[in-house]
Length: 67
Image (tube, rainbow, N blue to C red):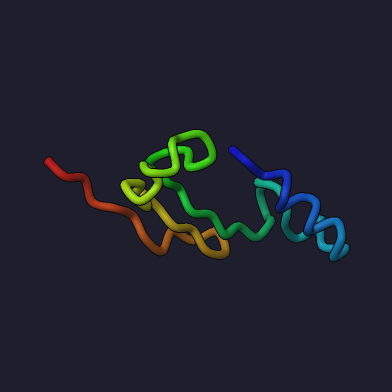
C-alpha cells in the first residue's frame, strides 16, 4: 500500500493526529483498486476497476462481483 504521500501531507498541515496513516480513530479516504497501477504497464491502467471506496472511514462503494 502506498501511504508515503498522505503521511507527508498530513505532517505538513500539522494534522498527523487526524489523518495520514491507517489507524483507529483517524479519518480515512481510500480507493481500493483491482490492480496496482504503479506497477502495471500503462496500457493496462484503463482496465483497472474500483473495488471499494471508503470516505471518512465509511464504505460508500463496493463493487459487485461478476460471475
